[in-house]
View 1 (cartoon, each protein chain N blue to C red):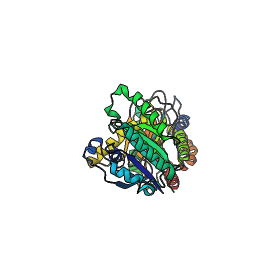
View 2 (tube, helix red, strand yellow; view 1 turned 135 degrees about the vertical axis):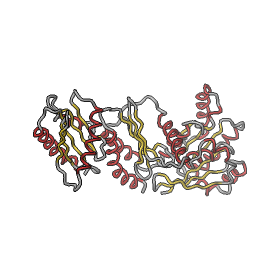
View 3 (tube, each protein chain N blue to C red; view 1 turned 120 degrees about the vertical axis):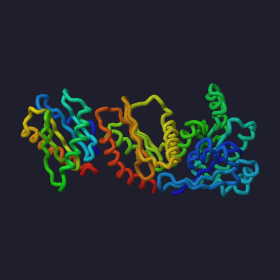
View 4 (tube, each protein chain N blue to C red; view 1 turned 180 degrees about the vertical axis):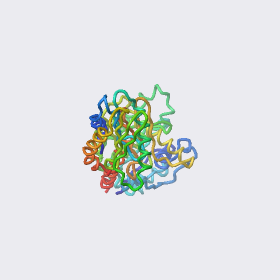
Length: 301
Length: 123
């Protein structure tokens, strides 16, 4: 099952860097050595087994943009499931960016009007912290105006913190078929295990696919934070030739179990009940594995 | 799947402060699945007992036909048996007779055998 995802935006806005961090195991610092993308770079990313994201990383230089909107218009904009448009917050050519964006929106509404649109306002780390919220809100307003009648979802991102994972998790989440049924099953699993929270991550990218909680948690950004932390740990393990398989983190308040779940996912189970033994939870995870394996494979078909 | 909150409550039925000190359900490698201790003993004791008794069981279980193992020590008594693919251990202090301990273990085993067999990886 292939899903076409377009990644567009002006030159040097950070598209290839983002793609490399999420899908190619680059760490933020590695992206400094990336060069200019020439025309369109196609990558096929396997996600959740049978789901293939056909990622079109479109070079942002003027010349290429011209050709996308004219000669390659149909080829580029047809059959698109998701359009990700990246705005560089530091850009000096504000009006031009919006104009280009509008042209892309027009092309999309003509060729793939059901496509989901995500706008990433990138390089937020270059903005002083106290100005970030207002700047983001203003930009979001502007983008929404320019996108009418289509409705984009806007995210603020930076490759240097967890906001990148939040945006991409949401994007990928919207592409997973039957995600509601997956969540329903995860809810059941959470209840039987008596866990506080259960989170399902995709194996290669550590993006959050689904989660279920029995106890409300005050940190709304915990998912992306965990994605970032675990991914970094995973990458440092592979650099030392160690294969990360499973982890148990325990203190007086909780125990967290991170383990490989199905062939394409990792699961994290948080337990705060001290009377429940680790082995019991690990056993339950084992039992649930085979059930979910069958289920996730049928989901991606 | 196991209802890990309910298991200790079931095991607790065998506990009686006057005779039994603890009931444990563990895997063959000694890791605890569930345990219930009398108020006089601590959780740590249960973990140690689990590790040692599972080791003693596997050591004596040469032909895989061991049914019950009774261990008589200076300050305590243990009865170990198999339930589905797990080990059940009931222990007490020196004053309790083996017959009583074994009977308790037997009843618990009969009660738990069927539901535990239905859980995968525990069969």
